[in-house]
Length: 249
Image (tube, rainbow, N blue to C red; front, side, top):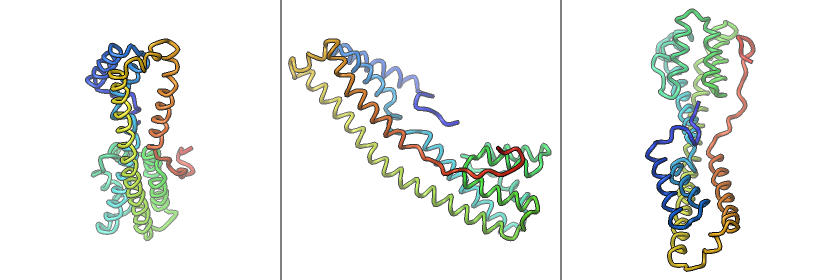
């Protein structure tokens, strides 16, 4: 599974957020603002960046490398589909190393190739790998000839590589907007600090409970915008293929 925004937060980041929130509370007496500042400091690196998107892109790139390696092995080594699969799985890309090693382990434990491949499809959980494994299963099961397997794997490898390239372009565009949003957060914080220091009684109405409730509205709106922008970091995968039989729902 991939990490959420709250998982694995470093202790020093949490400590810095608590300290920053306490300082803001002492300086402004605004509870809501101090909580917002604490959360911003703690989650600064994750507010507009979803690590799950990075994990998804790495997995697609791993699938592309796996298919490219399988294609080259089928073409150059003259091996059958089953032997080529096991040989390629012995040198897996890091992002999908665990599913491929599990596939090899199941084969060595006596699982039929079709069963191990069905489990591999569920572990990889991507439409491109589903299509490749479906083609390989047809060859292994004798339903289709092995002659066209190389061309099929090559086409799927190119498709996966194109998806990686497209995601990299999208991520570069997102990085520009993410940087702009972070600069706006810094500018907003500096503006509030400046008004608090030199604005005299301009911000005094926010010291009251009613003022704090009014302050909550723009803070919640800003938080909603940030969470919405963060949700756009995720990729929506196309519908997966489902292989009939061998325990695949």
